[in-house]
Length: 442
Image (cartoon, rainbow, N blue to C red; front, side, top):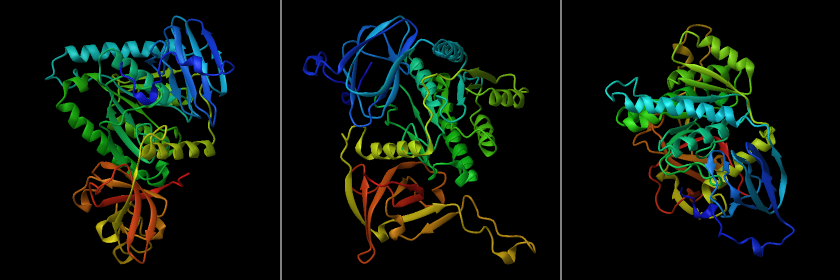
């Protein structure tokens, strides 16, 4: 198993730490150590004896892992383990009541389906299709964590499942404000999270679907269409299937969007975390689809509820991580461009038709997918823009994005814009998309 250098310390370095901060925790079988790293100092942790995992990824023996401030995680052991920690925590405790057995049972069922799909004739598209799992539930019910476990366990068996993240509010794969997908080839690094090697990213531009529900649906459909095309030509990916993480908005329009995602991705396994009512509603609405299983799962007692302020902070950290890396190990570049070199667009807004073309008494409605050119001015300061792969403006909605830039200065007199980008050099495209995603660099 590969661990990246940033997540791995040198073995046997505990001797240099002050004895007062180093402590050992003995875990009994099928129990876990739940940890919240302190807000301002990192934590080091290693496995001394036994076997243990973090969100489905096994810990290497005797190697210190460095966890940055504010990270929350759980170390679980199936057969017993001794863990050593060095550093401060906001909270750490052991728990022997976990839903892990039910989670691994789900994994075993998915494993069987993948094997059957692989063994079937690749000419029969339906039978060669592995499980398409969608994880649903209210905010802070552990959806992202369960998704990571199922993905990591699958890779340990040699599969390369596709991870789809529809939670535009937090963003497990890349910046918030996006929906994205990426193949997972190795167990997910317990510190660094989802790898960013080959993501397929669509920029929605807002942190809640309610800003533009129709655009959200269009992008979900576009992402599903692209994945379907990839699966058609790749029997291995098709058999491995996908794990789809969703947002925590499950009532009203949020519920409609869940049903839309289930339909568009042809999900055949729906895992409902921590809410009986949602499970019952989905079971009822999907009762005429015999090939769709709706499974109720208990949420972990280690799941921490976050208020709006904490969620906003988490978003800010995710954006900072995109430019600077998890532990400030990346060096973004400040670049300058002429106003005339860029074409900035907003999706949505503007009337669909003039009043004169509408029936008497009708009000013009905003077109949720209309492209509106945006003039470059001081309003773009501290805004995150997506760099589109589009070759022409009319391709912007259907195109995925290459990455993101952050506007640090707008010089109206000189008609120049200064922006932070992940790398030096020209942007891959002049077409930029603006939403409501802002960031104040700290």
